[in-house]
Length: 119
Image 1 (spheres, rainbow, N blue to C red):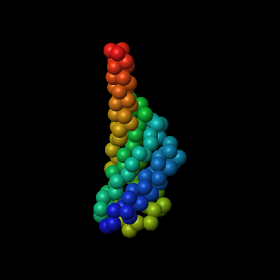
Image 2: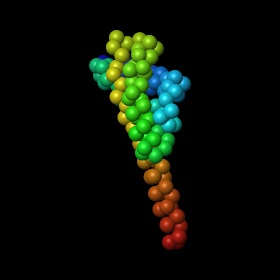
Image 3: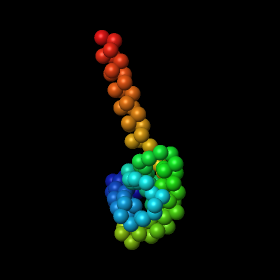
Image 4: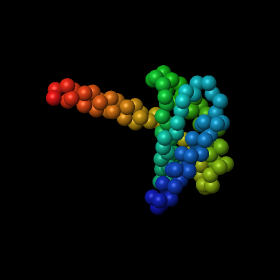
């Protein structure tokens, strides 16, 4: 399948799931969850949904469990809102890139301070 079409489907799935998670799910176990990316397989059977969770490891684990529990509901709503032959099975994965970016920025700031002190 053409990569452009897959990229469009990825973007549309991310947009729809982001809206569903933020507006439709009322689970108290969900912390601040953001759908950062979606990757649909070439055969459109599976979709890795990358989510960013603001909070500690415990909150992240609870949020992922809540999303997995709501997976059937989310897949059904996705199927109603997107026109595909098969609605992909959703696989939720924690996206820790924001944490890594924050840690890297902190390290760079500390290194810059050390360089300034040594001048």
